[in-house]
Length: 337
Image 1 (cartoon, one colour):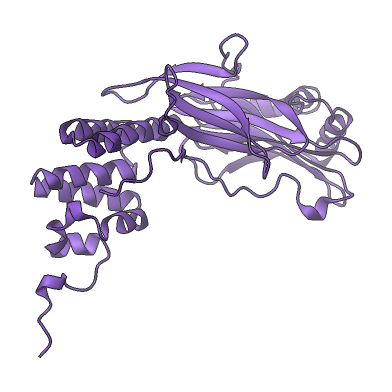
Image 2 (spheres, helix red, strand yellow):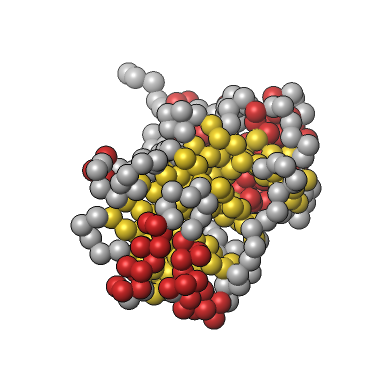
């Protein structure tokens, strides 16, 4: 089992976002703003998006963002005159530090919200944080050993500066590995007041920023965070700590809880396989390893290639195939003549 430093901040988020305002936008107005119009019971979101850059017609669309990630699905595009009217409203209010697209849609494209509701995306108010804090108390999603959890928003970093949505146990632990990054919004200039929705194991964060002065540069968008994956990472971190302390029974329970929270979390499956291998439950270990490979083969190959916990299992051809090992094990290689 590979023990990564527990002080690292674990992350579900894509940290390599493009800059908020591309260099080629210098000297030209650029507005990119999204608004969450409704949520389905499944956690999918109906999102309106305005793209308005000098030299091109504004574009205004209604799309579906999947709770499980993946590509967005565009439902309808607004007529050009409607897109221009909405773009003018957003530009006029573009230096206000709040989301403004949704209000502009009410005036000039109410059909977007109506279409979203027809499709089963009910309008919902953002989740209410604790008074005076950017923190939301929630319950864990897994059926086995659910944790009392908290979401919080913090600004961090200067290169680039960003708003982070973090998941932690409640009350928050001082240990860094007990806090998981779910989503990140790059900020440049004045931050826009964020809003957060939580539905069926998914957190949707609306946030962004704009530059002061003219021309207007404004970017406000939606970021998705998986509470299921975040909870799985918390359990997995506890399991690694138990493993390091020599308590294999406790580690195995925590890895099982990680899998219950997110059955497709490769690290939880892999670590559960390693624990089973150490307890001489070879077939269970191989079954878990196979599931881990189905979730993320590259990750498993990195973790398992030189892991001492799998030393005996690596002699098996099926395990070597799962780990991408094409040569026979060293002890099976005949000595040179």
